[in-house]
Image (cartoon, rainbow, N blue to C red; front, side):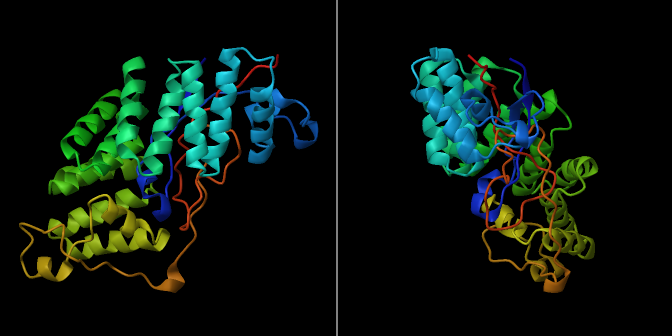
Length: 328
């Protein structure tokens, strides 16, 4: 079946998805019928999900199929997979992981299930398990750009920055415009104090996606360390006005805000990432709500993206892939 790759937004509560960068994919599917045309007794239709089908209805349809005796193992694996997608859209990562695991047990070469389980592991904090599943997906699909980008983000969470950089480089060799890999490689350059290289990656990322707040914020950090304090502070503040959670997410990824007073005093040659630093604070009245991200491929549930405490970042997409199950 044909896959379409996609990449995802993340809030402070789901900092692991801020890359993501999280790298995302989805199966192509037929257009969804109008709401009044959806037959809620059609379990296969419900299990496939769609714009007019709620997450609860999708789970109900998949569960009915899984519990029936009329499915082959192949189709039962797809039902588990689709139910996992519904759970991940609800940020119920534990149940999503259980369903992806059941799908893999029934179909051991189910690359999409490995990939989606990796996403669920990564956003729920188990970066090492995510690395393992991304690696399995890459074994079966060696040119999977999203798997390289996702594994790079997982390596970064494990502080394995050299391995992360290698994966971002590989992802960008396969797809030079990959937003997640560009943004994350920019972060990697910041952590290594390669300011100009970071700015170069962020420039490309922002050129493709102007609302990429992490790239704007990171570019501001790099500019400050390069001596352009006013320009850097302006970019960091602009990012904070769009998304107040960006500073916390960047700090969680090893990129804290710079200590402006120290740099202004001429001590920017060896910045200490571990020092407590000062962050430009935008005026509360200026905060604007970002628009919800249009998914690269609609997830199975018309999800509210991943649930979070902060507003979603604009123009990022959900991490899972969809796999329609045919009617019997």
